[in-house]
Length: 520
Image (tube, rainbow, N blue to C red; front, side, top):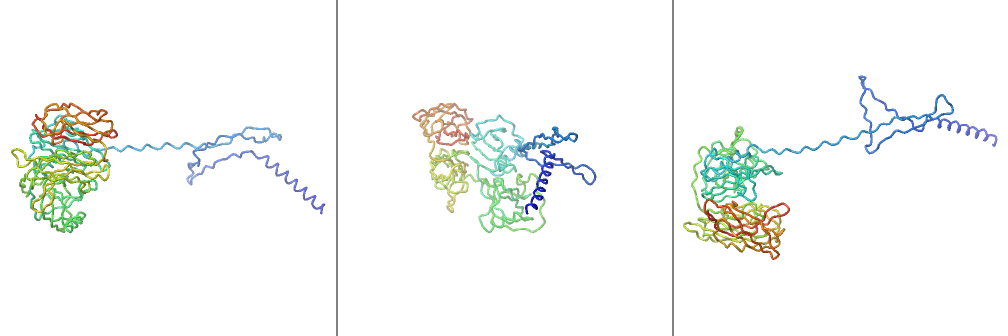
């Protein structure tokens, strides 16, 4: 057995020595030679070498045996190594360009607003061509930056800076008359749709009976303040709605169908709907037929031209708010002043409503008779439940309908709700009804104000600002400021308004008002 094992062990030893010599003859790092693929046409194809961006391969030195010297003298040999290229930087994200539609350019926006007032309130205005560029007055409204103004006689059109928002772009517009004190405030969106925010001193009109009007139901985009409108080349463009659920369901169904509709009902003026008018229908019939021709480019803004009888003016009941103006931020109460005429039982109803129409607070105010007038003024403080902050809503003025007890909307002002229980202010001077001219000393007390600062403004009932200044409260919360203000062209009702300024976004919260009389 030992003789047989010895040759076997000797063979294994010789085999181990041979394998060791073979291994030692190999280089420490074998060069990697990339293979370049060739296409079927013979062209060399581009090779993409995979790499990890965070790793860098550096050349390494190896020692290879010399072919002429069995002593294996060392020779430096560089292994080919491919270094990964850095990834190109990402392309910058382009900044979207905000483009203002041509219909919102000052001349076009002015003409849309004037046409709206002519149709919605039947106001006799000068021709649009008669309005000339005027001096821009930044005191037209506290929350609007005016960028253009046009005037003709006592009429002034002020256009605010365009507001770009997620839902689109709007242009604020204010039209006022210095002689009568009438004022209208609204906005125009990118589709040329005009909507009312506040109307003061403009007449209302009796509804007009409508029977068998034929036209189209045009559906508006989701960004529009209204759902749809009725269009007819003969009858013009009007908002459309119904109080009958069955008729309303048919109206919504016909929005997406070709052809024409035949409607009957009443046409209301000066309402919050498309073009300031609304067809309140009780009958609708779909008329089968070919799809009507496309609307003319200016159809949305055209006034009725044929068969639209001039409505009968109806100056009662009418009313206006002289505070609670657009843009005010209310907490849990508001002091509302205004004027009204020909209202039932000589009283008005003021409601604080949220954006869904829910009534958060309500107050009833009797009228104080005015000289040489069938109407009068009113003042009432309305407390309301503010359930959440930063919501939209409105202060709405109503009169009772003697026939059925329903409420007739006379005027409103869009507002916002803020957190309750913060700043408080009381005005000590001037007293209510005081006559002021050119300068006025305003005094009061305050508590819990950011930066212990208030903004004092002299305003008229249309919201025009005649003078303003900021002042600080002392340690006891007392404040005093003499305000110099411009002379209005005519004597009018005004107010001293005290605002809190938010130091973060500079938003204004109306805290207190005092009614005064402004002399010319």
